[in-house]
Length: 263
Image (cartoon, one colour):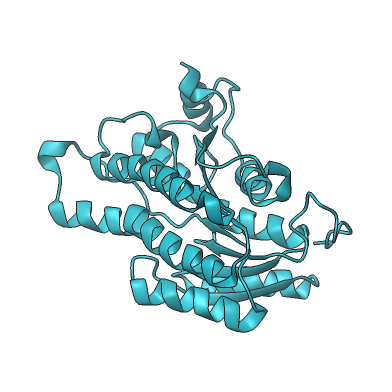
């Protein structure tokens, strides 16, 4: 992984300090690596110590700057500690990508398990509130501008049968994103969402296997482009929204879905 040679230019994240939650796998891992390649200092937050530490080590071995903080994003004390340790190590926070999420539920409303519903909301939605709470508080303490990206889903816009908890949580991500953007724009804090469609991640592969569906059939059903997206494509959207190149954009939900929602 070669570090960016664009440090100091206006449209890059070189030298910035960024937190990526769920940074150990899938889109989170790709996002972590994309920021590191662009010259950012990356804090990888993940509930899996093995996966999170491995990504941080990979970046460090390749000459980048990264550290790992074990984090259960559904716990306020963990998220507060994540931000505190980031600032203790790097002196500040500039950006964050709140990506952590778990697999959708797979049953209809009458079969819903209230405990499972609460658990999915805790990981996929309450975690966003906690992340925003502590990240924005740190930016306000610093008195510096910053950019935060919340990772939603096409389910943030369109319901799907058989996933009431996941759909509710992802709808909520958009509401939180827009509320945060409205409340903190005057302080120079931008908050946006990236909403992926069918991306070739372990979570999507698991869903495809549960449906006994081929990759080509899933791609044909969920993308106008006839293929699944890659984690790296989503990572580039996250990276751009955290860079000064997107300086006029806040309160928006950008879809990375191969045109799925145009149908």
